[in-house]
Length: 334
Image (cartoon, rainbow, N blue to C red; front, side, top):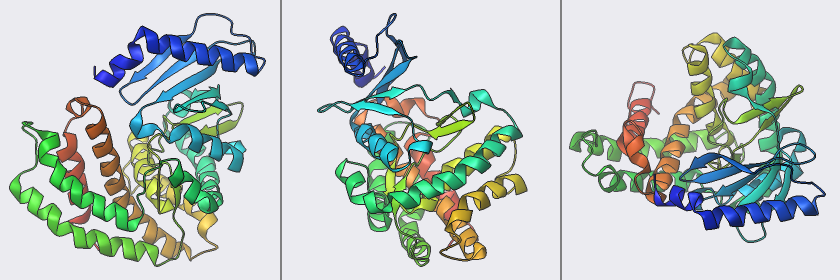
């Protein structure tokens, strides 16, 4: 367990978190009933479950890489309350927030193709949320939300290649010299891909960057998207990289299966006021590849911030870079 996770287990930290949760609940006229539990403990965040007179509420305490999440979540709640958890309070100084219970995770409530049916309903609403957030990009960046727009994305990716040896250390699966040279040569390809994606004129916005079936809550027919700790500002279509890959894995389908591509089209429907469906599909397929670049930047930030966390990941930093190389080095590359 890393030092950050150890900190979240420290009795003094736990006492402080409990005290704020109890005081905030009291201000909200919620009576705490029963012991406060800590069901989630990760190097980058921890969550406390607080039983109250109106049901459970959750205190999430974020680490440095997730510090934007409480204020960003509160913004999302103001902009599109129907698709966001109920943020009850944000700590005035620390990256903590108190959130109402949003239900059961999608992956626990549904299985198989039933998951796809939920996504077909959620994804167009998520696209509308992204469109509504365009005027709030400056606020999101001011909260510390990572900037993965075209120029910063490519520049940071080049630095990730340079960082990989120190992050991989003595791992046997670290990059080979040939792989490193191939990644260096890939940078102009990524620049062209970003220019092509931008040519439709669709504005950058808040992008979840980890939109899978573990980050949607469902209850009584309502679905909300939560866990915005990996969110960034980027082209909106990059959200499809994780979403479609996880949807395919969850249902045992290929990423080019008709049902998975149907999710892509459901997401794109709200954007048909900006371009034809054919143009949007081409842009979405390009964005799915660029989305892996964004994920690599997020992975690098976590690896830098929390010592030892990368050791638990098969492939490590090199594996994330290899995925980018595979996606762009083939015949379909830009």
